[in-house]
Amino acid sequence: MGKRTIAPGGRIEGEVTLPGDKSISHRYAIIGALAEGTTEISNYASAADCHSTLECLRRLGIEVQSNKGDVRIAGRGLDGLKEPRKTLDAENSGSTRRMLAGVLAGQPFNSKITGDDSLRRRPMRRVVEPLRQMGAEIEASEGDRAPLEIRGGKLHAIDYTPPTPSAQVKSAVLFAGLYADGATTVHESVATRDHTELALREFGAHVETIGGTVRIHPRPKLIARKLDVPGDLSTAMFLIGATLVLPESSLMLHNVGLNPTRARVLDFLSSIGASIRIPSLQARDGELVGDVSIRHAPLEGGAISGTQVAEMIDELPMLAALGPFTKKGIEIHDAHELRVKESDRVRTIAEGLRAMGARVEEFPDGLRVEGHSTGKLRGGKVDPAGDHRIAMALAVAAMGAEENTVIGDAECVGVSFPEFFSTMERLRGAEVK
Ligand code: S3P
Image (cartoon, rainbow, N blue to C red; front, side, top):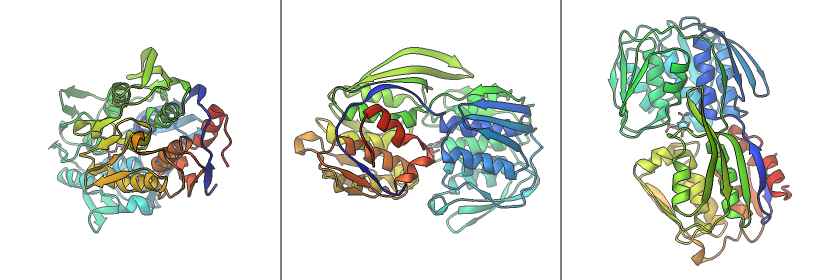
């Protein structure tokens, strides 16, 4: 695919059913492997990241069948994984690597897990530390980065407070807790996404949640399930972004995951003027799922900081890219975590928007993107640095620019939303080259 040229203009009109949520897909696959019996998952994410998880599970001796969104996992029970003959490759997926590290910590064999260049640069200490406290022996590269060599075995229960809020770290500790000698507890200062807790309960584990504390009891009998993955709201965010950038747009999203730990972004968008309605909402497999309707409306702009950062972490690149389409701009603080994602997202989004003519100030913990009073976006040549969410956020901003924008390395969108360009093309009725 290489580069893509985005022509500005058009409007978004139509309805979409989204591919399955990435976070939930990873978890259903991992827990399905540890359950007894065959788990059948429908609407499994098309994201390359979630297929990295399936590949790692295969290397751990799990039979996995995958046909479009239908995935069948022949679970082998809590003690059924096999010592992998090859290194596990999480490729670009931080969730695969961190969450599987928790499972591997409990196995009576050695395993090695690595990833692509971007993943090998990302911090692993946050997951290595609690797993070592539980008794796993883990060797890592300098600075506790991947590849990780894990010698699992008997684990002790711990009471752990992650220094930085992270659903991946919480999940790794909970997965390791399945193999511990007592109840393992994680305390959170901000409620991060709780799909692991909800999914473990669906499969039969005993997980308690009281306020910001989650406790898992060890060695449950996990039973295979038939599950349907809700559409991915973080992926939908780019379609919502395009609806807000292009005047006279309106969009209906069906079957979207609206778990409260994920849906804060809709509250934020409404608070700055977006017109969003949820005409239907239901509970399914422990998750909330609904339809979302969005209409174009002028945006006021606003600030994001504190707990909002962890609550909207994956949506921040798109929110920043909406800055030039708002009256007052968008300002983000307390977002150090954005710098250790698939790219340094503060820098890559700031550089991309500047290359298109936006006025952007970068801070150590975030950025400020000026609103439309300082001029319209011109368009330009941008480099998303191999980061899927940056590529999509810049592509959406490009639709509202004055001239064409060329996005280098645009195929990286496949990490989370392989259908991004074709879906946009269909909804916008505009040509993308
Ligand atoms: C995820 C948690 C978040 C998020 C990532 C998916 C998950 O990462 O950014 O895209 O599925 O648990 P952190 O746990 O590093 O905040």
